Figure 1 (cartoon, rainbow, N blue to C red):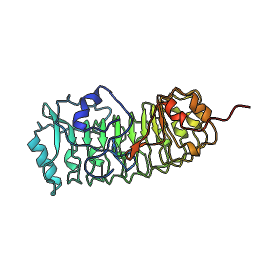
Figure 2: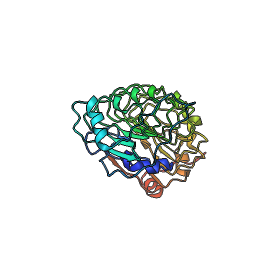
Figure 3: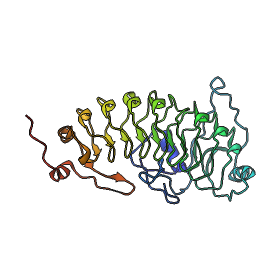
Length: 324
């Protein structure tokens, strides 16, 4: 996916739209995701004008204890609220406000570390990338659907438990555990450059379609066996065994610079893109040649890409040994 500003993406988010599979490079600090973490697949974006967005529906009292503050918010009031808790804030935030309700807030690269001013505001999308935020507890119980946390100090995701999150970008953060995301409604999760090694929290995420793990110390992808992934990036991970992907609906796979040596688990998959390191493969190259690929290569990251049509790529590779 192309990493876009939350104020611009919110209307599409509410329509459950998604696209692509590679986070765009950040325009300020090094990274991606959301698209924004880490040098391999960085994220974050430049601000854009805030379009109108629908008012967030108030959750039923039976499902949340959050009491939304009954204030008709304006940009001036929001700037003042942020400044009250963040003395270094210089007023660079952008907002999408509908009928006095702030539904999207962009604070990327702002001098902010305290979110207490947002408690009780029904925010649906928020970009905190590049801030010094570490504590998400003020966001507990809010109807957040998209949250960008790239290059923040966040380590604890449990305050987000139960939120209707669809997109969460954590690239370049010190996050090492996914507690709080168990069974979440997320469709896109960017963990590039984090210390996450255990994916078990994702085993019951029924809508997860796009997952970026570049540079993570992940070895076991068994929890992804039951996840409806369409795009998976394992670039520079410790993953060796692709068997959990057998029989899935995966369409795009990036396993370059991994210890994967056997591609036979990919047999029968409807892959349209494959990025891998041919020199590492000891078995299954014939399977790779039989896949319905539209593009194939050895690099697809922020440092460059070499994707080619299959016929062009294979013509430059050694012929597969004849079957005995």
